[in-house]
Length: 297
Image 1: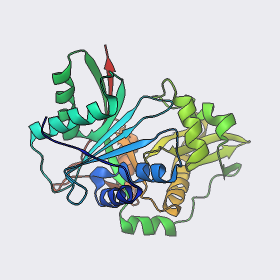
Image 2: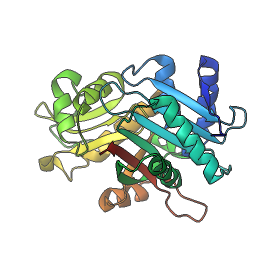
Image 3: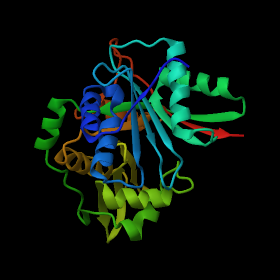
Image 4: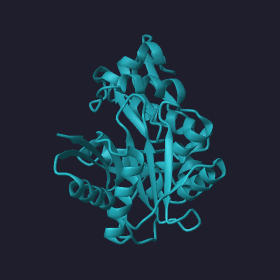
């Protein structure tokens, strides 16, 4: 193993890493995560950040979240405009896994751009043949500076008569929110409760009950937008999203979200929305983010 990761441990260097990552859409998951570590604003997911080869001239960032309630989360990001040798990248992945897991064989989630996920899979299978994985392929949407200004100048949508904006009760209503998320698993109820207690969220109610909602994940992305069937086609999904956009911008962060590649209705609506930009390559082709879950057989 030749490559050597540098773990970023001081508050000063974490802020430097946060500033570096803020310049690159490829590292969009890092700034808010580093913020939660610096401010201790989401203690249920402590963060470790690594850089290669150094913080002055980074090529790669790696992040480990040792989540209290759900499986650990790993994130990989390559700085735009840099190149990496494949063998070098595999060495880095192996070193990263050793430094965060040691000898433990632990189920985990990896978030990265598609080409990095492919190399992560190679590294995993070179280390052992009894790992299995599931992939969720997504498009990433973010806001440019002009879109942020436009969003701030756009008032919240009026909701139909009888509906009103409110907050979700983290204790009494976390289960309602969690039960609507198709990817929910062990520990997600507790994680949802922590998200609603500590991070921005949005809700629209009708007759006192939450009928539309959306929240932010500790990595900063918009999470679990949902409208109950009887209340759809009334603009409530757009309403909670705009409310969450305003709340995210008010705390100084860039709103961003992912949409599953096979969710054509939401994908087309997001592409058409003047407030969102889809992350694409120089030829205009949508880039792919993968949420990859690993289990040991």
